[in-house]
Amino acid sequence: MKFHFPCSQCLRSSSAEKLVLRKNDDKDAGGGEMGKKFRLFSYHDLKVATCGFSSKNKVGEGGFGAVYKGQLSDGTIVAIKVLSIELESMRGEREFISEIAALCDVQHENLVNLYGCCVEGAKRCLVYDYMENNSLAYRFLGSEQNKNSFSWTRRKNVSLGVAKALAYLHEEKTPHIVHRDIKASNVLLDHNFNPKVADFGLARLFHDDTSHISTRVAGTLGYLSPEYAITGRLTRKSDVYSFGVLLLEIISGRSIVEFDMEHGEHFLVDKAWDMYNCDRLVELVDHVLLKGDDEGLRVEAVRFMKVGLLCVQEATKLRPRMSGVIKMFTGETSVEGVTISQPGFLADLMDVKIDEKRSSQHL
Image (tube, rainbow, N blue to C red):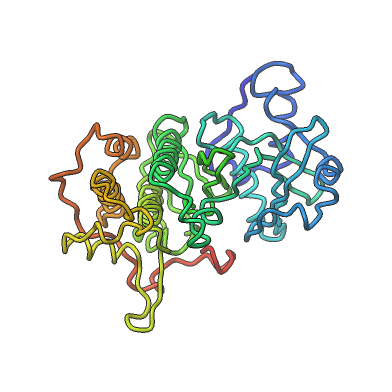
């Protein structure tokens, strides 16, 4: 039996227990691929797998809770996310349900695989593939030494992989899925540094007849599209904007916000726009990549940065779809001669419709 989810509004009013019981019924019914690939774990099983959620097995932590490396009884190495549930507000419960809804029946090489979950009392855990190289933020943007290990080929592979994952979610998956929190720390890397988009706790489902969803703003400052941050109107182009910021990060090797004593705080999107207007975009390409005399690399890197600028344009209708981004990456569609308009930018953070329940890192 195939497991179908209702619309996102219905999901928010459903309990995690009912959702998982339905899923478990599908498994017990025997049948189907969905039942075989989604497991219901006991809290005891996960505690044993992580040696009592030992600090030595902790591989990450965020506003949602902590992530631990664990080994299941069959020897499978997994990552176990232990959610910090705010039962009085039910925000954590909604994020738990959203993550299951988004991931339990998706299959894509650039999306993290969800094995199953645990629901016991107030305890909520999600069990994923373990990614040996942690996140893009940790492995690539963490230090100068890390950047040296990220060749142009590796950066292209990561950029293309994330684009393919989003194209699948936005255009191939039904109902469509908007991730809502695309950023470097939510791109995980396997043993071959292949990217896997993760953390679907903020994801929303879109049906074909839905142009936008009005919702509380959630995500990470710097990656948020300005129209979503100010109005709360979420569309697939909100993810496209976030991807554009991420792409500029990957190619430039710079943080989205930097500070120096002479010029104060400046933003990567603004910097890229200024360099583009001066025809000096190549100077923003990570110096690690420009040590040789490879003119082809320079041309390709600048092309990728132009794609990033196309994705962060202020007018949402001018931003490309993710399938279009892939065509520009592969050269099927030319970027040369395409007019790039001014990027969207949050000039005043007071304009953001802040969800005060989120952590300082997130809105």
